[in-house]
Length: 314
Image 1 (cartoon, rainbow, N blue to C red):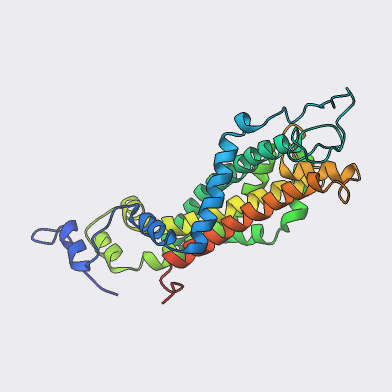
Image 2: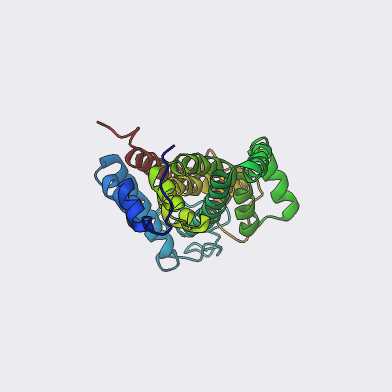
């Protein structure tokens, strides 16, 4: 343990102590920016970023891009219900058993996926970072209480609890987001805590503490910037988890009936007995789930590799 003289009469100031430590604090976003610069140099991560950007753009413009109302039962030129029409010039991805345009539903489903994924990830990131920061920095009773709560949360099976919770609370996007947050904060808190335990023993933190810096100042200025890359990694993974959770719950009939998501499309195809016959109804949402979740995972893994020196390629 390195000891520093206090900042009393004739003692060094906080700035001097940080210079002694050789680690004067960089900008709070510096680790994030450095990781992003390294990320775009990875070809696989760059492809993943492009795919995510395309999906995000489609989600933002889905209301303008959708050629039809996704809930409208469309007629054929003969006036009959356009039921299970194959892809054509009028309906690029065909129609459903209810006469709905598949492309319009797919575009609107992209928006639902991002609403659920981003909303859940932001809340998960805030809760995980806050609890991990408090647990790792203060230790003792604070650490014991938070970690015991984490252990209890980790012992809960994810999918069964999600099914029961949504069934009790009601099928809505808000409740699905709430369930995702309650189930996925636990891992992030442990990860952030492990980083804080390492950072709080660094020389520059000891220097700031010896200079009389408050606990809040040390956590906010010295520790939090180094936690941001890890927290961002878990938020990225939480987006994929949330999208997959919403699709899974919707597929088994627990999704929001008022929100046309990819999982809801697959559920309707299954209940109508078209899962094997109407490939144009099943394949598009399935491929969207695979491409989006895989891209998020690839970017997340690349981010972890670029921001963690022990995993960085030589």
